Image (tube, rainbow, N blue to C red; front, top):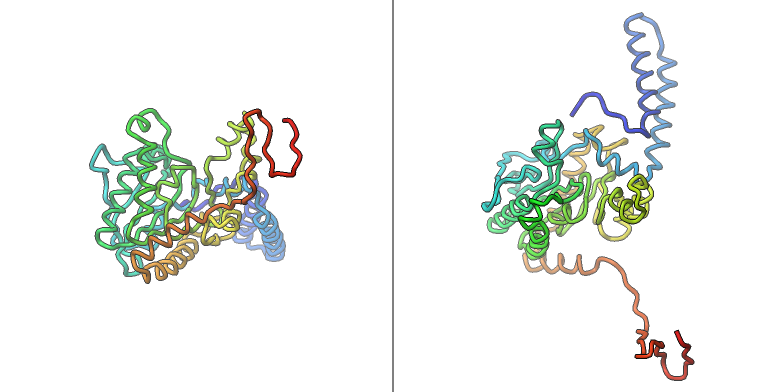
Length: 343
């Protein structure tokens, strides 16, 4: 992680105050002057501003934090709390997709299989990783690792962070939609525990393709949706610049998805986002995963699959009402005794 944190647009007032505090500290050290009172006043003001801004984030601001260029990625978490990681590559059909990483690892003394989307830090790495947008071979690689986990009775830990599956012609020619659909079907019946965590962006089927799990966890400032805010705005409003409005309508934030029953647990982030304190974020994530893993490994494979099935069957709500049939003439049929009107 870079030492200097990149400030987002809405964070600039905080960055300016922090810059002034550093200037005073530097001046006090070089000029041997006492600015402790001024520094204390600015620090208090800065803390108040942080509480005000981060305590009332809009959905769009959370999206921006999830996309922060210094936000921890899958490989950062693997290094933070997994040991003996051995990356496995290739789908044994076409090629290796660097936008999805996966392999064998030890997690708190337990053998696991870890799979996750991976973005790049530099321009070159971002291009190699295709900006975290997998091709079909990426999803086939992920499924190959899941089947390996099932064979050797290892839990699967999935980390989701993608704007979506790659929509290019080559990906479509190689069966992008089928690869995603096949993963959904196979993960639903996998006979080993699966814990999925949205650590950043959770875009559409690209996220869902490794997102069918017994537990769905979500970092506080991540987002998870059927479409990106820009894509939604472009389709509904014919104007991608209305993405903030679309983000509010999509209900894509962690607290909203928890209230809807889509997410099982929201993992709190350090103030300002996970990128401001990776060790603290990694510890919180490790603790949450370990808690759920203990619960899932206590179940038989049959109970595990049944609970997973019931979990996804219960998503969403519906309301039963009397069916209204249309008569051949176009009039609505009502129960006897009720007057009908031409429509």
